Length: 305
Ligand code: CP
Image (cartoon, rainbow, N blue to C red; front, side, top):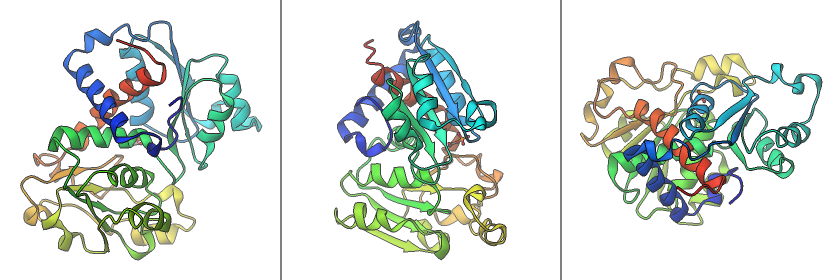
């Protein structure tokens, strides 16, 4: 594997290898402090980001490497009309590895064909976000100790939520996983996830609208933000944005063993009063993202420690 564009490029064995590496980094970070000495990561972010960009940068610094890049399209030559392909080919002359976020689906794939160095998809439009899924998987692994026999509820904007799409694909390969897809009618998961991923593998799933009804059966609750930037119509966004707001009251019927995840940023969909609940894992998820990105950089650069 030279690039990470789609989480399905990685087998479950390869995912476990990354998780094991991340756990080793957590146990002994000093062992990795010079692993990428002399290497450069380029972060090419054509869309806003806090966690993904900064965790990639922190990951490379903690591996002893350096970072170059930009955090908005306006400060790159994309603003003058340069193509993604030419940008990637150019940056490949300066950096050893690239992490790219772009509003257009498929842009990191195009970049990977031209860069000449490994390219990581750091989120492409409403399509995929494989490194968020790495953070999600490490969080589930650390909380549950397994990926098997879990009922996973995904709630909110399942249509545009790229993290949801990548997580469904990744989790669909573990035995005994069941999905409860909780969304308004207008924000249901794209049909390809049902027809190409869930149904061919006979994975049990339900599409429902009530979070309260689903709550008692869930082992994982993955909340998501309604993605204002993907809506064509502001009125639709305003109508749908507060459909689901997780509160301590709504958690009364949940299992004590529930793990609450959210890729963040959050807007209103999880009340801050939930943050102190021991079941809230979303800030642990943020930190897990850095460790998994460290493990991924090591793998793609073929660094042995
Ligand atoms: N989860 C995530 O992708 O967050 P950022 O948009 O802040 O990178």
